[in-house]
Image (cartoon, rainbow, N blue to C red; front, side, top):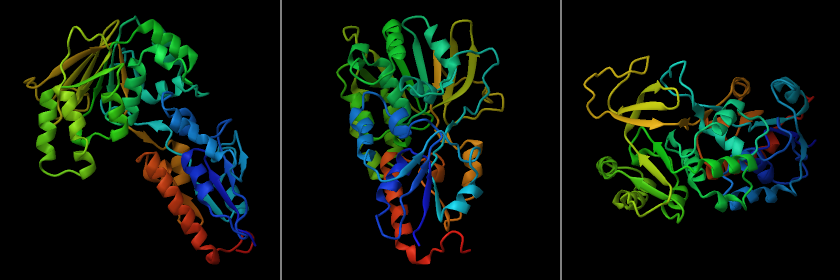
Length: 381
């Protein structure tokens, strides 16, 4: 009897798992269920359009020997019980679809607060768009100041796309509507703000280096932020973080000059958003040092105002990570590591980059292959 395997999710984790599932006379061609009308997940809808090498990696899956069922949401159109009745192994690789929200409640009347992933999906032509974001973006006045809360690769990607000269994006796959809006807006200032110090940021060296070395963008870091981060680093941080110190040092040594007309990405660290004040045409963002606390309404418990900073922004994007939606969470509860396995963001709670997803997919495929002698074919239990 042949081992029958199905994979839920045709994103990078699911596809790499299918690729690494070693061919064997005892393993049937895997079946992949995908909720969207096309495969590739984050490789198609999550990678910045100016990263063609990563986006074009989908070509390695064109000859993948599998059967794909699109437009099918497991958990709604098909149940996990249906899959277990049909397949010997079920690998859940459906990712983390929901954005993590701010831990403070903005005023009800405050407009212009969105998840950064919604903008990513728009400029990558994702089929299910946040129409409110699209409408708000199209009605922004030219030369807006944009704030991004978060210190991961998504935040840096978004900041880079927003400040890259539109003509440099014309040859990419960016959504043409978004490109038209970027031409109109002429965005000159984007602030990327992290709660932790720079040693805690999740930027990979490649993403940070792309911004630091850009000829079209000027990235800056307040020297005081760099010094605070160095103090933390001196207490011991992973070596991979210490290798980034040179890049942050270079950023902190730069100054904003009137003769440099390039758009600017301001990196800020050690700042906690504690209050949002909504005005008719902008937001006022109030930050305190990360060591202070806030109450449930998002206002500072310490009213002294020491260390408080304020930023006026036309648009606030939050990039605080991803988590499972209710359907994915329900599926994840079925993981037993005997017949049902998790892979990628569904298994890690939205943690890890593409390289870690690939490594996990390879490891899981090897485990299943190495334990072929232990499986009972469906229908014999």
